[in-house]
Structures are given as C-alpha cells and as structure tokens.
Length: 303
Image 1 (spheres, rainbow, N blue to C red):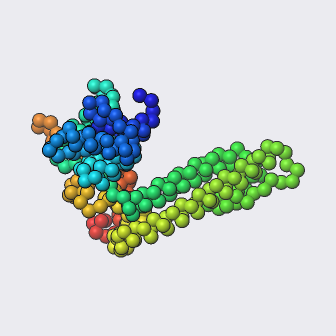
Image 2: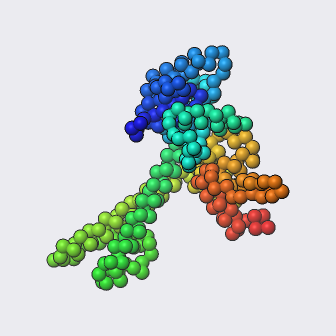
Image 3: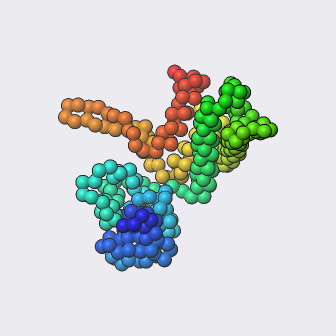
C-alpha cells in the first residue's frame, strides 16, 4: 500500500495518514466524516455489546481518531507500536496490525489511557520546539568547529581558544578582509552565518525555557521549589509523561512507564531480572538527571 495512508479497524486501529480501515477490510476516510462512519459501523456490528477501541499511534496519526472517539463517549485505549516493531512471524498487513492491536488490548489487565490535551499539549509543543532548537544549535556548533579546524592558521588561532558561546558571538560579527580572494570571503561568510545561527538558536531555546518554566509553575505551583534536584525541564517531562490524574494507576505502573522497573526473566530454579530498555526514554532520562542532581547535594539521597 502506498506510503501516506491511514489504516484503522473497529476495536483494533493501526493509524497512518489518509485513510482508515476496519475489520472485514472496510475502509474509511481519515477525518470527521470517516470517523463517524467507522463509529456507526462498529456500533451496528457490536449491537448491544459495549465497544473498546485499541488505537496504535494516539500520539501521532491516530490522535484525530482517538479524540473523536473520546468526544463521542467511547473508550479509546493506547497501544504501543514498539511491541511489534521487530520481526513478524505472520507478516504485516493492515488487517493483521488491527487484529494485533485488538488482541493486545484484550490481554492487558488495564488499558493505557491517552495523554491529556490543553496545557499539557501546550507544554509538549514548547518542549519539542526547544529540543529542536538545542539540537540544531549543537549541529551548527559541530560544523563551526570543523570549519575552524580547517581554516588558515591566523583565523584558527583567533577562535580556537574561545569558549563555545564566545566563539559563536565573535564569528557572528566577522567580516571578510578587504581585497580577500574568493575562498577567504566564503570562509568568513560561513563563519559569520554559523555564528549568527548558533546565537539565534541559543536565544530561542532560552526564551522557550522561560515559557516552559512559567507553564510548569501554572500547572503545578511550587513543585520545582519543593522537590530537590528538580528543574523546570525535568518537571516538564514528568508532567508530559504523567499527563493527568488517573492515567497512572499505581507507583508500580509509573515504574514500568519509563522502564526503570526491572523485567523478570526467571525460569525454573533461576530467579533473576534484567534491565528494561523499553518504555518512555525521555522520562527515564529525566529521572536519571534528578537522581544525579540529588546525589550531589541532597543528604537523604546520599544516605
């Protein structure tokens, strides 16, 4: 099937982009009209029995369908794509993915809930924007270092010993010497553009972090000040993953969410566990940052 289609199934949904597909190979257009048709069809098939929707991709292509179903009073559960990202013994198709999603939801004691919208979604967008600015600035700094390494000795000695931020600021204001040849002109233009790009991205990231801090304080007043080792960015990641009251049913479930809880791999007389390398890795990273910060200056954690 060409890339760019959305497939869905009543009960089990495998979401992509443009079209929705239901069990029995029924297809629906992705959009309010198609969602309404899929819901009407599923209700007709189910009769008086209740419906539960297992939707893969509720944070991406499946979000529109999940929101529509939730607004219609339906129970929409979240199914992770990572569970079947590896080898497939039975192959792959729209119908197989939909059935797999439905079976996986039936096998779970408690279906995962969708993450909330509103302020949480605003926080997610700010975090995504900042992460992109930071990553782009890092790429530009790496390129700037590479350009400096291959620059003439006079330019290299002028810039190599400066701090990272100072180097970008100096490069942003560079101009080519009068009468320079083409290679030298292009070199100075490249250094100036990279320096300007880095400083602009750094300012953008700083501005976004201020907005993130303000939003975190609005959502959970006093959280950052009350908890040792917790900064605005780590608090924001906790809020993004936790989402809303009722989504995480227990402390053990929260331990499984970022993969911090070990996975049992016991067999026979062997009783052991292994590291869990799945789960929400951004939340896992945030917890590690908090733990490292507490180990430096938080006496209860050190003890």
